[in-house]
Length: 102
Image (cartoon, rainbow, N blue to C red):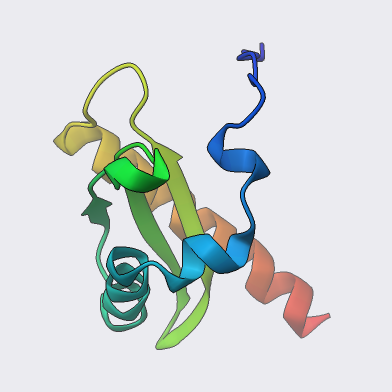
């Protein structure tokens, strides 16, 4: 099952990534992500019209392989959601490690 949301003109998805990445709050969040090894909740950035989101690192040992990003659209994620996301990140890391080893 998939959910589709309308994308009205002028929304955040039409903005240039450079503007987004150059925003001081986003730059600070990126630096935080590179040092954290636990899930992080990132707050909304009003002027960029971003929602709250949770970011979970995908790790293989000490190596960062990527991140799982989840938008908090309908509700704020709870502790059980974080556990589920960490399990998903572990499965992704295992699959990525298998593919790297092949």
